[in-house]
Figure: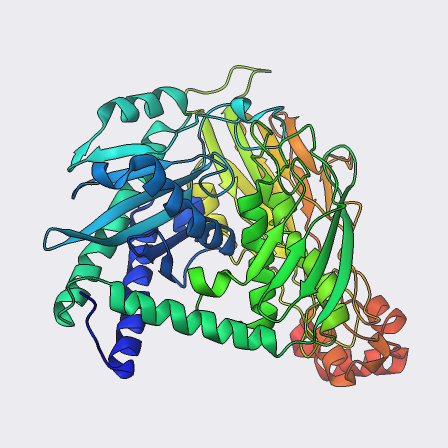
Length: 568
């Protein structure tokens, strides 16, 4: 029976529920084995009602995981069946089409029972460093090559872990302790959420979540529809070209703002790629919805009802609606560009609202290290898989500069050098901001980074590149200039590919320059004090100050003279 409570009590419970899932996410960060989770926050956590509708998400996490996971719990319920759901169960999958887009993401769902009755579900997702197959990269020709596939199944039944699944995992991945440890961390994360949810229900004397669920979903739906209703009824198209794997990819999108929904259609987008950069529709929806919510209703909590009015469609077997068995390991490389494509259209409907283009996709790479083979390596040489999360610059905003080395839209953190080097014998020789990489404008684009990557003398390695913006830099908006392109090369200057696994011999180094965000508005309108500040901080060079912002030699000299201590 639904209990009646006051609006104030419902709001308190709603806030408490958000705290529950945030503690759930923090438990995963504290217990995870993979640095991608522990250091970068590449995860999600949420609580769902008995129908599988997301009620609340953790603040920590990525929109790709959260919004894709919003759909996945319904798949778990359908596959497992209510008659087969028991207290103590834990379910798992890495199905790209019923999970969060590729095999490296493990989604774990746990039913929550209170006083003997099913009251909801806790779910979480995390990226594991290795899931077998070719390894994390773009090189596969089908999903079968990309790693071990786990259909929706029980990781534990009534508290008993399926050791056959554990043994299969151990036998198919390169980092068995790390991967199995992450499975247990995910299960523990949900258990923490379940305990806190039970505590909340006891405190507020609830027998089920139906009342608070109705309150959350109805208010979120109404608030989102009010925002959409206030927009102009309009249609617009947007497009952008990005690097792709062996040939450029065109993302094309049309927006249709109606009275009670926004339809986002990707008709005209490039078809499937032969390599693993294709995107399942669930991931496309996740980032298209995120882009629209950021621009239109950023403060409305993210849940099933606030996502529902954003309808996303794409032609089957386009690169943003890849069907099985397309290779999808690097679905984020294309998927993270979707918000910029959506904003190219939305800017024509809501001017002075959305940012200029940024780096978009994360600047990740994976290093597969092994003892060198050109000469005998010492016994201390080991095999290791090291995944590094890094970011270029974000695009300038209509009223503010872009953020340096900050991931938009994914929101994950850049991993510290110390954490990266701790996971294996990789050496980060250089990591610093990249001057002049932010596009000039009234508001400057965020800066990218320089990195130089190598290994200890006893190791050679395969370098799996996962970059974009090599040939297609971030585009400026409203007169702003483009950001700097990505560059990837060997220490002798030999260019390397932006995507794919490439061998680096012992002693070799990879020189990386990550892209900058684009500028917003005419550079001639930039505040002179901001130009001086950028010059003092080293964000721009003297040449850029002169050529892009019209600063005279005399003014530049006076800046340096007045700030001698900053340059010594």
